[in-house]
Length: 119
Image (cartoon, helix red, strand yellow):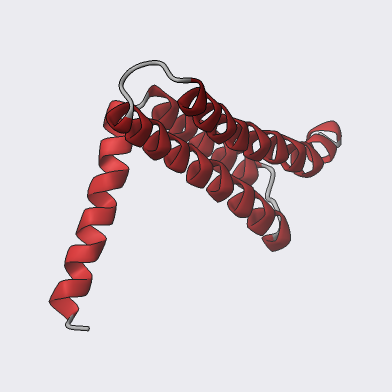
C-alpha cells in the first residue's frame, strides 16, 4: 500500500476522533476523565503494569463510547421514527459502554485506592 494512501487513512481516523470530540458531550467527558486518570497515575507513580491496566480499560471505554455513538447515528439515519427494535439496539449498545465504564472503575479502584490510602 502506498504511503500516501496510508496517510489519508490516518487523516480520516483523526478526523473521526475530532468529530466525536466536537459533537458529543460524552466524548468531552471521557477526554476529561482520561486526562484526570493520566495525571493521577503520574502523581501516584504507577508501575508499568498499572499504566498498562489503566491504558487498556481507558481505551476500552473510548472504543465502546465511539462505537455506541456510531451505532446510534446509523440507527437514527436508518429509522428516524421511534421503533422498538431500534430502541433495543441502542439500549444494548449503551449497555456495552456501561460495562466498559464499570470495568474501568473497578480497575481504577484496584490501582488507585491502595496508593491513595498509603498517602
